[in-house]
Image (tube, rainbow, N blue to C red; front, side):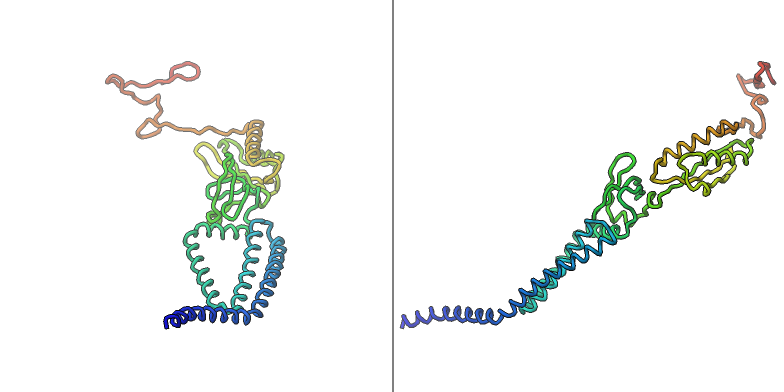
Length: 319
């Protein structure tokens, strides 16, 4: 009796294991056709993913030369096609629960990463948008968020601007996209505005002709017919005017050099024609009522009022 009970206790687990193995083997045999189809589909999707990736690269190269964005999107498309193939294969193998679990896991991971790296994601997306919109190119002179200089390089996270002072500024792409971008290079020209003042005693028509001729004779000035000369205001000690002219930018002459040459040219032309650029004039009024000259005022010195006197250029004393 004890031997029989021992045999039963041993044979029962063995029978269960054998039954389970038989079931697995039967299932495996039944799934052989599906596995063959799955393997074939996997190879097909690998080939399709490669073809789609190459097609995207050809199309992308016609619209942009950004290698970083091209590599990123081509990889995303490749793995997206392969991922779709994997989901289809899992469904063919009747692993629906695995598909559901994978989708749920991808959703949870994506949500967590979105909260954790939202700034990085924002810069990433902004970098992609900038790559397609192309508001500037490498070497352009730009003004972005209080920084002016030359764009030296860009990537999917930052835009690097080298300022005139020689520093490199790394501006996040999110800030670049959300702030105004002033591109001084894209149109190939730039306007220089100068404000000058002349004496009230000078003839204004003569001044205008002298200034316009001086700027037109300056080497490096373009669009001379679009030059603008306008008198602006009656200043405290001068009549002020603006002269606005165009130069090629970037070109053989820098903006600062052209502005400096224009100032020197106008000054030389004024000197030749006896045109005066006046100094600021200040009038001091020592009288309460106004209009009283210093020589006519009574000054209180040592308790006595004395009348001041001044001496003219001839050395004579004037009362």
